[in-house]
Image 1 (cartoon, helix red, strand yellow):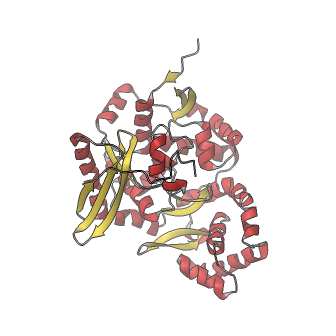
Image 2: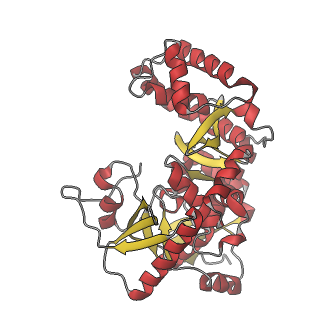
Length: 388
């Protein structure tokens, strides 16, 4: 007789996802920023300060320690999924780009035409970049754009960004070491000397396994949206690692997760978790899924993404649900946080918010103060935000 599919409710779904994301747990469990990336596989990274905090939050590392993981070549940023910046292990860049880059570049063909970036211009930019970065050199975005301009390649409008984007997706460059608050471009093959070599079914299976390690339970559609690979490819990847997976049902839909531990271990995990989190904008806890309804109420989406502009604000999460927003401002005395819950918060939860703020202060290495007031919607922006 077939075993009955386990059905879980919203609270259990959020608990399991928080556990997968390594959120709210004692941070020493992961083993530093690299361990946090190992857990999440790749973390959305277009907002660099927020992306670095995503790693510090999960690993307990300080900001200097997180930046050091990029300086020593362990971690990098590139555009491997959805044509969007992500942080990932340097050793994973080559096989992921082999899996995703062709589709990404093909999808941008019309945009290249609109920007008048023909193959000759792209190749000229590539050769200029290779010469400038040869021998271990590194350059910031502004310096590379000046290099293109000096050679007669216009970077006006979105041309400059698209050139840098294309060079990384096509495997010429990667964002590696830090210089102050900026991350510098280096040659991918020079910077990443140790790499994994995966292809075909092995690559698809690894993608599914690594995605679910940091985001389960999730649907095949979630993985396809996140990776921008065809659903048929994701189903092939699921079949490749099916012996490591199990199904659960949530809201009438099959979700996949890695095989769970014992109930006793799950109970201990639950008891050790903090109830309040201060997540950066674009954190994978929200951005890692096509369907975000488990964590985000539809009426709160316009506050989280004002004007449906694709820019996700930093969020306050209480017991797994997005419950408000927060922002920070540097002061002479340290860092001032403003927390804006969507509805009144109990004293118990404010104590948890205070602990979350103190953890952020430890990451920054500065004293933190917290003030709060209710968030309000901007007029004229009703409705839920679509997936970016």
